[in-house]
Length: 68
Image (cartoon, rainbow, N blue to C red; front, top):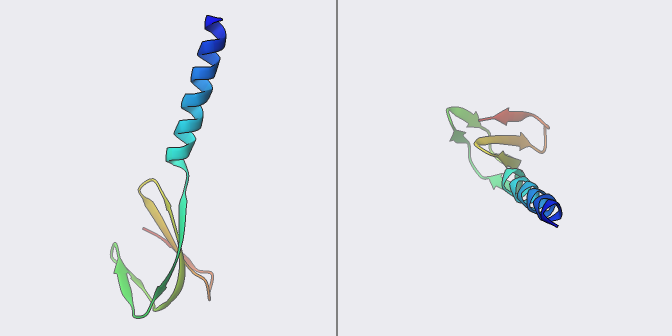
């Protein structure tokens, strides 16, 4: 029984860790040029993907990505 509790606890901790490590994605529109971490972003539609401390801006018209 103790072994089963250990397995369940390990699985629960693993799943909770995956929740915190998962990437978040946002759609945004810049109506004018903007700067993010010394990177100039042109006005337009972007998909912002945030994973941990890394943000990736992808211009949806050109498909060009910039990591900051």
